[in-house]
Length: 346
Image (cartoon, rainbow, N blue to C red; front, side):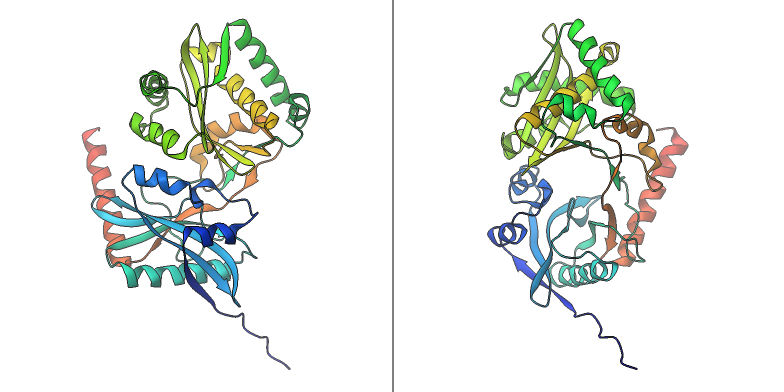
């Protein structure tokens, strides 16, 4: 009886920005894995570690861009929403790519403790994220129908009712919605205060204003846009939207407590979707919903599911240990700090 031929081993090839751009070609790629994202990472003091192609039989199967990060004086690499798969994505190929990357990182920089990257298939070397959460389901508003009426028709029944009501209530409250991508820094600082209020209400810590401003200015209006809902000139809701090719993502958003009375967030999200559809974009990713892996996103997922009939499965992020002993020590140290803070009530 003939034996099955084992799959051909893959290899890792270093790429420059142009080579990676050509490799991706017309494949839909998240902005974080494209060349423009490097400018934003650089604005935050984070350098590119490298761009790589995973090849099998000389053909590009996946590409990935990794950036240098640090936590508690430990160093790691982060490939946000990477790798980008150009060929068939299988458990074996995912595992081989991770093995090749770990070997490459060990060869180049002994200080790197782990790699954070995305994978569809869980394996023994994919570890839950340390100190962060991910998502493996999201909701994407389908913009391809083109007109508000057709986009709304593709939404669930409660979503159709919701956006109609939000549009009406916000209009009757005297709200205006406009793109404000080119606003000045002082104007942006006023808009940022809405996020401060959001964070206080929802119990999270926002980045400093500079991070969001740097995203807008370093990515530029082609890739980062700001939409704001105002009432009597006062900002109450905003969406920072990123764009890559025909696809957009609601990367950050904020809403005041008062905006709940006139359904500001829903009115804004709907207006943004309609504006992007008119420009010919194909989808607006609302970026994250609950799953069995991430029940923490249940509440926000309930809101987002109004905009699409079905969730979209995406590859969640995982930590991949490069230095296993050091990684375990880092996890234990973080757990100990959290335990101390819990006892002190902080």
